[in-house]
Amino acid sequence: MPRESMKSKRERALAVCERMEEHYPDAPPALDFGGDPFRLTIAVLLSAQTTDAAVNKVTPVLWERYPSIEDLAAADVSDVSEIIRSIGFFRTKAANCVKCAQMVLADYGGNVPCSMEELQKLPGVGRKTANIVMNAGFGVVEGIAVDTHVFRIAHKLKLSNAKDPSHTEQDLLKVIPRELWGPVNHQWIRFGRAICSAKKPKCGECFLVDVCPSHGK
Image (cartoon, rainbow, N blue to C red; front, top):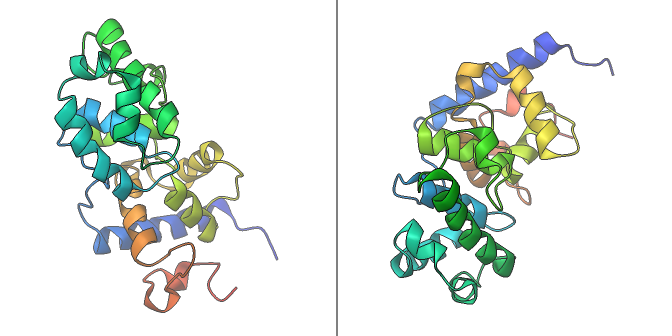
């Protein structure tokens, strides 16, 4: 089978984005954070290798107990662990939550930095988290956050065959126009949950079926 040209892949990626926009216009972030960049940072940090729904259950309790950055910075890690113990890797995440709050206070005057480079200096924050915080927290789009849904769908649509999220993001940035990067994560998460799930994809209901190279395979 001949290798697909970049032109063809870009045309398909554009069609995907246009249809996603038709079906999921103004898709909200999957995590509840009340518009606060710091709470968003913590929520995304907690979401690694667990579901957004699980995170949305524990964060209200966390913020009731520790309503400010100062409160969380002074928190006992074991107490934070107890609050979030229902999610994966809760002990490591609890320690990172407290360290992250302490670093935001000490190094950034209590304000989450609006920079990909600076965000990734925070404990527990990688490129995916930084992308989401920049996008949803500050309205600044510098990339595409590749979580499990975006990773799976990018490969299902043959827009990437990279082995990891970082290189998958770079592939997506090459085929999706920059002005369309912003809503990709939120829209593809909704699509992945509603239609293109990992276990039981609903191909019969899919609005991308005619542009999906994986259909019927």
